Image 1: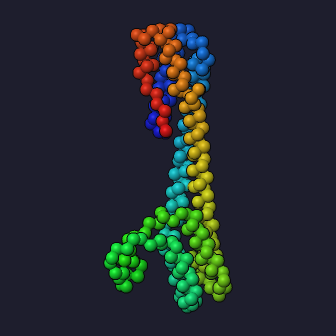
Image 2: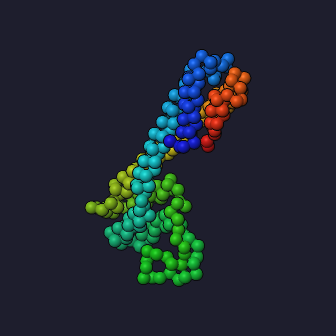
Length: 241
């Protein structure tokens, strides 16, 4: 639970306790700030924060699983090409695959240093690329392009390896499923945020709006020097983004 929202709910509970202790003396004419309405708001706010916590946890798990599924995707694509290179020994077809594989590694800036042929997996002539530059959707699309190329060569098997056509398609399905789940959990969390804000921070019925009515009522009823007014006025409710 985010501390700012938590504090607002805790302050609301503190105010409810204070008003309850006043007994029949706390009897505002406005329904929004009567005790039953404040208690309903407190319960709804607690529920909304709990649901937000759950949604945040579910999103975090989904994102972790997504990252784990995509881990090493670039190397996986390179190894498919290597398997094809060895198994089919067709330079032209390997070059076609390489064109797709290159999409996983956008070139960085030129460094002015010559590429070292003794380190074929590292291009010293350019800065390291950022995998984050490539969207998850595009990575899946590139892998699907590789699968489509492999299917044009039925003699390619890749048996006993994770680079067979069936294995590549299974990888695409797994990546897609994890991405869809993460997207769904992200959207669900956004909806929970909206629901929480509608309950806690509505301009007319939210916590802050109600206390803007409570404070003048307390001044009218008990005076600015009263203990109850000073106690409630000291509560710093804040709209948290």
